Image (cartoon, rainbow, N blue to C red; front, side):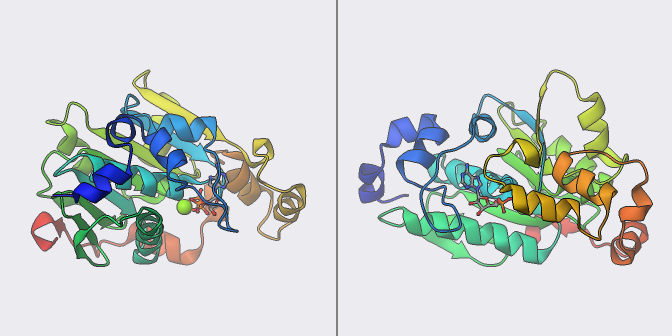
Length: 269
Ligand SMILES: Nc1ncnc2c1ncn2[C@@H]1O[C@H](COP(=O)(O)OP(=O)(O)OP(=O)(O)O)[C@@H](O)[C@H]1O
Ligand SMILES: [Mg+2]
């Protein structure tokens, strides 16, 4: 159970119905200097529970991980016994996402109580869980009816992993699936859904040039970067470049062809 003080401190019913109001009223979105900021229109759409399937093709540093983390936190806080699966490509990345949730936790007063907090799981006193899953795994099993699945850097997540996660939503009519990434070549489920996903998918593309938060000199530096034009088009312009192998570094390629995967089991969490 969450404390009475916490429920009283928040505008509980309003914030439960409207995550946008919750983020803005509580000042949970901060810029690098720590100032509270307004959500973009597209970020509001991601938070909107009515959008059950969302695919984000948004440039580097747009705010994909931040909004994903806040969305998990909102769901876990306001709905008892929620299960949120937050997939990230590496442990470093998932720790970073958990850190974003921890920062938001600290912003709310009194701080929501956690029953368990480790590198892979955040368990709230209302029975909700946010579980971090490694995107490098091929399969996961044993998680029943998650309310929210977010795959961060989804273009790099294994297709088998996606195939293992999607059926978990079968018995969650209100379950949400959010795929967030910059493109990574014309391949895999992220590319396919972006190209062929039907009207059930809300597709959001944001390129750096259109984002007023990206300073022109930063963009110019990236454009001239030795990584080259294809890299720039992929990371900042949301383009699925077909000359993909020129963008892959050796380590990524090795991981992509490796058969050395373990299965992730809910029992482990
Ligand atoms: N609406 C906003 N107003 C001001 N700052 C924002 C807004 N949305 C996100 N930010 C800030 O942008 C920065 C980058 O966010 P984040 O790391 O979530 O981006 P990302 O898209 O996941 O980046 P990457 O592609 O590199 O993983 C953070 O400091 C975040 O607070
Ligand atoms: Mg990110």
